[in-house]
Amino acid sequence: MMKKGYYQKIAFLGILLLCLYAFRQYTANIHEDFSEVRFISKPENPVKLFDFDPNHLSAEQWKSLGFSSQQVKTILRYKEIVGGRFISKEQLKKCYSISKEKFDELDFHILLPKTNKEAKSGNFKHHTITVTKKFNPNQYLQSDWIVLGFTERQAQSIMKYKAYLGGSFISKEKFRECFTVSPENYHKLAPYLLLPEKTPTYTQSYSSFKSKKSPEKAHTSFDPNTLDIEGWQSLGFTLNQAKVIVNYRDKNLKGSFKSIDDIQRCFVISPEKYKELLPYIKIISQQELQQEKTDFSTIDLNLITYKQLLEFGLDERSAGSLIGFRKKLGGFVNKEQILDTYNIDKELAQKLVSICPLNTSKILKYTLTDAPEDWLKNHPYFKYSADKIIYYRINNPDDKKIWKLLKVKPEYEAKMKLYLK
Image 1 (spheres, rainbow, N blue to C red):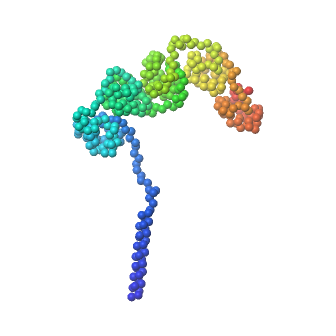
Image 2: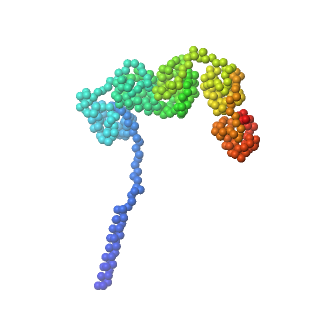
C-alpha cells in the first residue's frame, strides 16, 4: 500500500509540472515581440489622373487610369449594354468593375452629368466648341480655350497637358492625344490648327525636353537672323529643334525673321521659351547692317566685339571661341594666339589679324611668386601647374628656383612667360 501511494504522488507531481510548463509557454507567447514583423506588399504604380469623358476613352486610356485588361473589357461591354454611351456618372458607377473606392477617386474628373435625371432633363450644359479662324494652340491661354467653348476644368486640363509635353504641342497628332479633347471636338478644331499634321521624325518629345544650358547663358542680346544651328542650341534648344528653327527661317521665311511675330509663330518655340528670350531678341534690319560698316583697321583685337566678328564674316562658333579664349587669357599678347584659338576659321582669322591692330598695354602680368591663386588656377596656360607653383613658392620665393622645380616643357614655358613680368 505504501508503494502504491508513493507512485501516485510521483504521478501527481509529474502532471503538475507539465501543467506549469504549458502555462508558462502560453504566457510567453502572449508577450512575444512582433515589432520587427514586416508585411510584404507589391507597390502600386501611381495613376496620373486627367479630366475625361468616359465615352471617348480607348482601352489603353482606361488602363492608364489604373484598370486591368479584364476590368476594361467589362467596362466597354457594359457601355454597349447601356446603349453604347454613358449618359451620367450615376450610370457609370453601376458598372461592377469599378469599385466604390475607384469611382470616388475618379469622380471629380468625369465629364458627365451627376445623375440620369439631370442628363435627361437637359440641365447639364454641354459646351459647344465654336472656332472661326486658324490659330496656334501653343499661344492660347486658359481663357482662350474657355472662349472656344471648353469648360474651365477642360481648359485647365489642356494647359496641364501642354505643360506635360514640355510647353508645346509639336503637331496635330500630339494635340489629338489630349484626353480632354474628344474626337468630335478634335475634328472641329483640326482644320484651324496651325501645326504640322505629323510629329517630326526626331524622337525626342517635348515632355522630355529639358534645357541642358543654364538660362542665364541665353541672356545676352542676339539677332535670330545670324544664328546657325549651334547658335540656337546655345540658347537651350535641342539639335533637332534648332534644325527646325533654321529651316523655318531659311525656307518658310526666305532667309530671315522680319519681325518678333515671325519668331513667335515658330511651333517649336514654346510660349514659355519665347517669353524667356523676348527681352534679348534684336532683329537687325538690312538698312541697319549697311549703316554699321566697320573700319577694322582701327579695331583693337583685344576689344573687338562678337557682333563685329560676325560682321567681318566669322560664324557664331568661331566668334564665340575667339571671345571666350580672349576672356580666359585676360587678353591676347600676340596674334599667333588668335590663330591657335580652338574652332577658329583659320583663313578668316589670318585675314583678321593682318588687318586689325593688337594693343597689349592693358594685359595684367605677374611673377610666379606674386600671382594670385585664382588667376593661376583659371588661366589656360597656368592652371595645370598652379598647385605646384603655389606649393614651391612657399619655401622658394624666387622665380628661377620655381622654374627649375616645375620642369615644364619649353613650349609650355614660353606660353606661360607671355603673361609674366
